[in-house]
Image 1 (cartoon, helix red, strand yellow):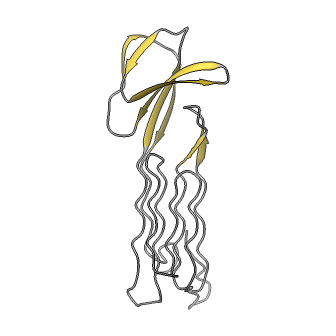
Image 2 (cartoon, helix red, strand yellow; image 1 turned 45 degrees about the vertical axis):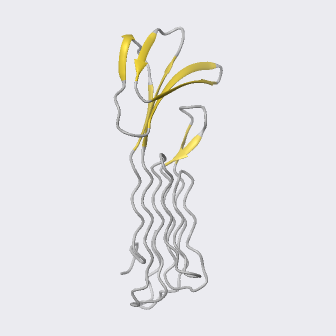
Image 3 (cartoon, rainbow, N blue to C red; image 1 turned 90 degrees about the vertical axis):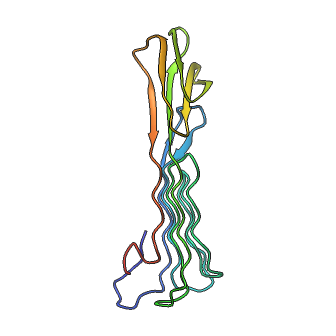
Length: 173
């Protein structure tokens, strides 16, 4: 998210909100993942940064009191919010937010399929009248089928989100 640079000294623009991520119902919770971080406010004193997008995006920093961009939400892959600053060239800038960590989920139908697997945090959910077993990984791990087999499984793989940028990083430095 940047700001308008059509005017040579156009520093007084409102930061943009982070984009919404993708909604997924693999674990029965219908969550959003990978939302964008909101832009930080650069010069407009007294204004907050923009909101992060659905899916864990962090809010941008503001200039009412110079505040840092917020981190993306853990286990969503949401982007960090952009930093803020009080005026051009002052060097008074806040930190940008870190991106949220990622997540991996593997789901397969239970019974009648006879499969035994290990790895991650295991839960059973019912979606639309069908029962599933879900393996959720929020850190490094191994998914291992120890017996049986299946011809169908669903996976959600979300990488960690990116950090927010320094004030004005989206357009003008």
